[in-house]
Image (cartoon, rainbow, N blue to C red):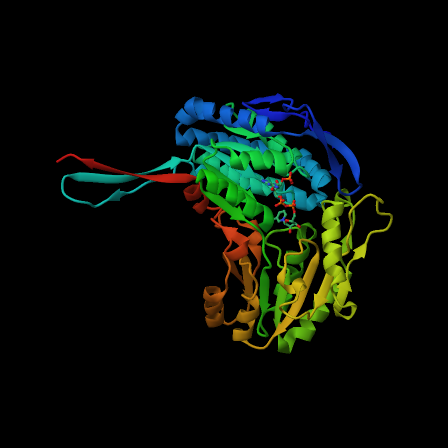
Length: 481
Ligand code: NDP
């Protein structure tokens, strides 16, 4: 898939240009290990130029634009994304190694974010506050200014949609640093946004290395808000950098999300969700459900049925569009293999199959279902970020809560049970930013606030909550006697 733009350039101030150093980095297709393009190695100089362009946009057309017109541009952009669904899906599949159908779903999600925030742009309102006689007091929701967006490689389009979409809807100007391993659709999105009528400088994209362009972005004094999705280690660094400039940061750092299956659950309905939530995007999903907790009386049955489903999974190149594709890189594959090596071989209930004749340079791992490590074992505690699920038994509700809440993370959880009281009790007691009852993930849920607690991060993206995160509240107290 050859992009329709030159991916070796940065997009700054509404124009394509080489990065300051002129250096480029390879784009590797994870399905084959073959270089398919080059991207710019952006640096602090490029980030500085992008922030300057964003500031100019805020003092020009973009800053003066009424909210409903920002919404119109986002609506046009959403339609243009859908018009390019084939190109964008192929680009993402080749760049990320994501099976084509999953990549198409990401394009649709990106369009949905544009549509949702297009409609929301002119519906964010302040309030009037009853105060003393002689005063009129009201609040204004104002954009932060220039916002920084650091996006990982696992769901570039979805994460750009939820963070850049909300930031543009509320009138911020954005500087986006995509992951060096998955930049193509970020650049495509900027090109489409420009063609949809977004004024120059409102969205700037600077690819490059995290330690160079990413660190420069988080430390830049012109940045007024940072939205970061990625690892806990880098999240800590990002938060430390934003602390220097005393700016707000949203951190979305993944998790170890459990699904709790009770004996009274509709197992036929649950089963596809139990498996899919673990292996979608080869498990490289922040909200992956990597722990399945099952009430003892149905534990053996759920193990058997999940094992059967695992044995039917096949893994192959993204364009073959099987259930799982390759992992993003040899490094990520190495991380997952090290976790698999920690498992007692007798505990590996089932593996999926690798398709025949895989390209030798691809980073393939057959999905693995592992039963019964102790709840405090690293396999049951740490984010593996690969197609590996752990299945554990519990005795009763109290035990289920203890195990479910027994990690340092808290992103997503689900409860499978027909018992209404139990559903409500557990929804309150589970430590998670989202709790699903008799489903998992609600197909992405553009409208649903999302984010975590503990090591999963803080702040909320998606839905209307993101609009609050991307604005700052001003209180006006007018004394008129
Ligand atoms: P990182 O957290 O390092 O990368 C996420 C983003 O941060 C990328 O855009 C990266 O750029 C950027 N970045 C890296 N270093 C810095 C820095 N010092 N300052 C600012 N930005 C920076 O994740 P990795 O790609 O290294 O993956 C490692 C592990 O992280 C995975 O195994 C997985 O467990 C977890 N992860 C979680 C994700 C989630 O959705 N919660 C997403 C991705 C990873 P670049 O890639 O160009 O270096």
